[in-house]
Image 1: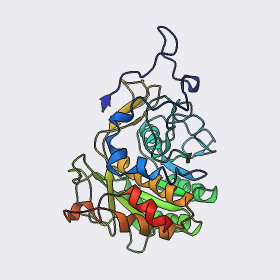
Image 2 (image 1 turned 90 degrees about the vertical axis):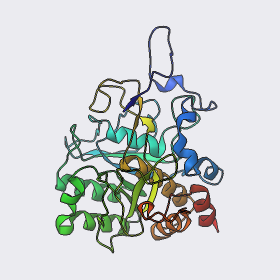
Image 3 (image 1 turned 45 degrees about the horizontal axis):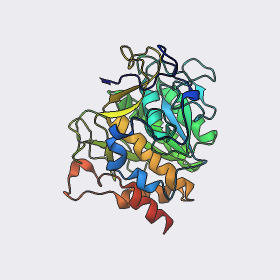
Image 4 (image 1 turned 60 degrees about the vertical axis):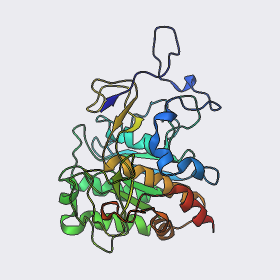
Length: 318
């Protein structure tokens, strides 16, 4: 992880990471370091849709609910680890994913989110160490779908977690339920660098691999899933907890860079939110994202290619 220095001094000598420091008319100071937004054409897509009134459920480790770039972005979530309604992130992963998907944009603080008008539903299914039970993860997906999520992001591809979940089809059934409730399910491909098909062929899920700044497949990214797409996942700047967690142990500035297919997935979730706001249905959203992905070098490791938000939104309006 690359450490970011604090971005603002709101009072002399004291760093206060609070919403009051923001200004909705000012650009985000860390925006120039967000190469990934431009790589997938999200800023150009915002002229047509910003994902307003769309709810992206981040089924993950929770979120820093008081982070200045996320505060006010949330709808009610749930914590299946502690069994309460305060899904506080004690790991850092979920906060990073949430910021990529829908951090405040043009508020004079930190970074820009992929879907500036969308809301985040934090659903905590993974503990401080990043692990979680099959039952809780499945419950989290079903809960998000039943409580109004329009897009469900599953950045759960690290290590053996996903393969364990898929045994017996538990996760496939939960994803099917979410799809039937009207949600688009977007899932990270995983970071083992392997050729794999992680889901049953007929599972309605959009699998996402990671690409780098040159538009090539990241060395760690899994590939081979049916009709998978890719999105940036290397050295991705986003929000981190403003308190100490696994991912922010030596960096409580509120920002940092991480790499993984976990970082690629929320860019696609953000794009799905833009298309949802335009009135597209889940199957149409997935088809549009796949049809407009760019793979000029025909790299099999990129799947159908790197997503193109501007092209997708234009096609979605046609």
